Image (cartoon, rainbow, N blue to C red; front, side, top):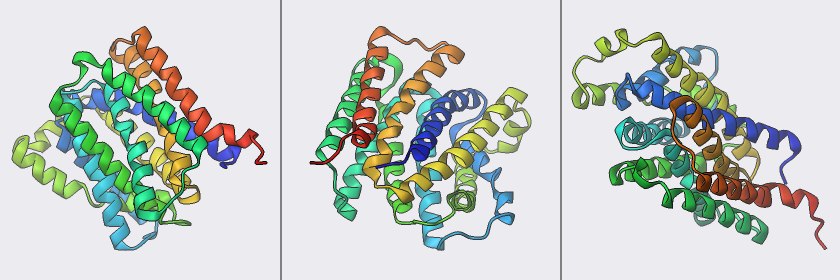
Length: 287
């Protein structure tokens, strides 16, 4: 079972990553998605002078390609025009059951009945959100977000096998991977002059980029990676299902995206599932 300190850290990640989707949407109003991915990780590159290389190059390349580049290239492309911030924050959490399934298949991790029940309840809440999504996402946007979720899940498996690694240093070094491929692809697909786009970026746009870079990448992923290195995926990943609650609420307040009564209901279902999967075992003594 997770100690109280790690549960609190997981809740911090929920808040940071939930509010992060609104910042992404604001930045994507001024930046094309692939350029945004390259920029957000290029900002982190100078920090490699502060941290020693924390893992093998294979691990760094895997984390950089899957968690840093693959996940956000798909997600940002969907959010640019094909998905709202709230619904993207919801559907990306399909990474949780994907991670648990992959961890069971690849590493043989066991899932208790109580955890499975809680995860199933939380997934039912996620499915309810998806059903009532309506016109907030296109079929292409849904495909892109799910591809991002699969990239996140595969990256989680790498983190799971890196106990004792400095996760902040790992994500800083993994920031070396996305910039060149993303900036090059952006020049080909999104336009030949990314520098002109960057020089015209407003102060609000830069603020959104920096929030995404610092809060999500440095704070969020370093904590998330540390939790996955200390606990089985089945205990950590259910927390991520609370991200849509924060994501949808933040998008409603800042972006004016609508929250219906049904969405609020399914948010409660998700939180109950997280409580059952993660918190309830702390108060149940085995016979």
